[in-house]
Length: 207
Image (cartoon, rainbow, N blue to C red; front, side):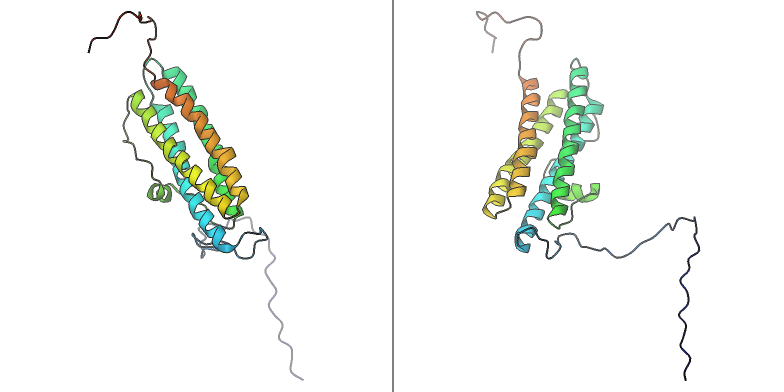
């Protein structure tokens, strides 16, 4: 009778040494969605929605970073107010980024994450590394908001057409409305009104 081969016992020795420098193949490629999720949304719908959401995510991450750049580099008589406002808006955009990214993952997709990938995807103009005047900073932020708001309106309508009510609700309730409110706060800083002396209505500016 042949002897049974005894499989070598698995090593059970506990070792406190971290297993560093590990690499492996991706478990899911970017631009794909997981199959068979019980979401009552067909795979083509989820593919389209995750692609559109990733574009929104890239623009939102860029706007977020633009707010932090403005927060650090703002200068002038309105420094204190804008320093705080820019950081407040930055924090709100951080939350929006997380919500968009998690929606993409929930739909079975892969969200953008790294700065290089975001830079290749965003439609927002890249600012210079140096410091800019306050009106230029605010104008850049408003231009970025406009891009995002326009995309939100189109994406919400498309999501509703495809039956993806969750994405439509997220885009309107959490992204669009927050961006609209931030636009209001920013745009009021570009209204040219006197700071100290009111202008006599009978006096007209020359030219």
